[in-house]
Amino acid sequence: MKEEISRKLYKRAVSLMPGVVNSPVRAFSAVGRIPLFIDRAKGDKIYDADGNEYIDYVCSWGPGILGHSHPKIIEAVKAACDKGLTFGAPTRNEVELAELIKSLMPSIEVMRMVNSGTEATMSAIRVARGYTGRDMIVKFKGCYHGHSDGLLVKAGSAALTSAVPDSDGVPKSYIQNTLVAEYNDENSVRELFDKFGNEIACIIVEPVAANMGVVLPKPGFLTFLRDITDKYNSVLIFDEVITGFRLGLGGAQEYYGIKPDMTALGKIVGGGMPMAVYGGRREIMQCVSPTGKVYQAGTISGNPIATTAGITALKILSENKNIYTEIDRKAAGLEKALKETGLSVNRIGSLLCGFFTDRKVENYDDALSSDTKKYAEFFSYLLENGIYIAPS
Ligand SMILES: *Cc1c(COP(=O)(O)O)cnc(C)c1O
Image (tube, rainbow, N blue to C red; front, side, top):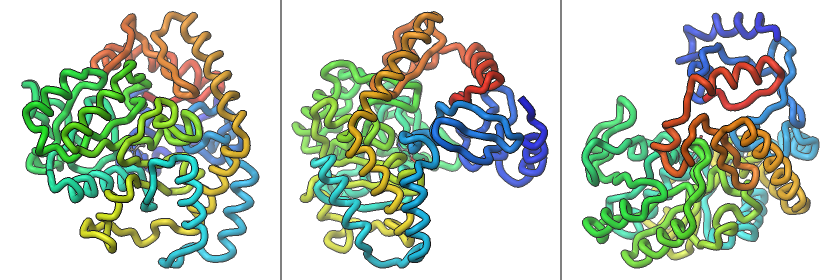
């Protein structure tokens, strides 16, 4: 494994970008290395600037479900580029993509296209607040919904209302309406609703938590969230930025048979381009400007290149349903291998994670018990043997 060029690029980048990256998860600091600078990728392989080849298990953190540089997506994007990059006006593409998404996820009756998952969840929450006329929201410890101010919180030391910012630069006042519950713990949610139920605009949840490693919802947990939000007329938002088109074409909501009021999509929906979507019940989405009074906008939202990549990716996925059985089968093999080494493994479909812990991982605290030093060794061993996995 040569690292010469990556090292040179690292030296140039170190004074230019925080941690040399444009998103913190890309830094290899957690595993005590410098990140590889990637030059190109094709199919299941990724190649760094030094010409090393790796089997890529990161897949750009989700969008790469079809492998890198799928010929049909590249061809479609090239053709779209010839017609212009952005018009700031409605296009046929947006109509086609919206129809496609609705056909795959019928709970999304009306939707908006945006540029990132962060934007999608942030906007969905604003709409939920506008619709209900309430300010409070409930999120779960260890679930990630992008980097907007109100969502960068962690639970404080005392129970219930004591959430604190999880990032410098987030004013306490921005998170005073964010309540934090424990994933897979119905009681922690019930306590919040007992106390604030009529002030809670929404629950936002990753139906399968996939940002603290992979943590599956316990049987009944999602149904419970559906029921309690119904009871209090709160909005249930499924953040399916990872699970959408990943757990199957209909996402986690189809897999578990639960209909959220609103859904956020990202990652796969853009086929590798910056693109995300939020949407849901017509009655709720009618609140969005210009039909309603919740403001949300975007200069390059729904742009023709990203929508082209998204449409092409979703069409390939819906026309080749065996893709899901195939990645499921492969992930099952990987699960077996990891379990044989003694790791605690969580898997659902192609979402898979091995934790270096004896515990069964069912929430954030369980996930934190994973031995990160061992993970770092594991990571380096794999990397040096041509296998690229997430660097934390
Ligand atoms: C990645 C992710 C986001 C944020 O999406 P960005 O496009 O990175 O802003 C939101 N929610 C979940 C569940 C994610 O995994």
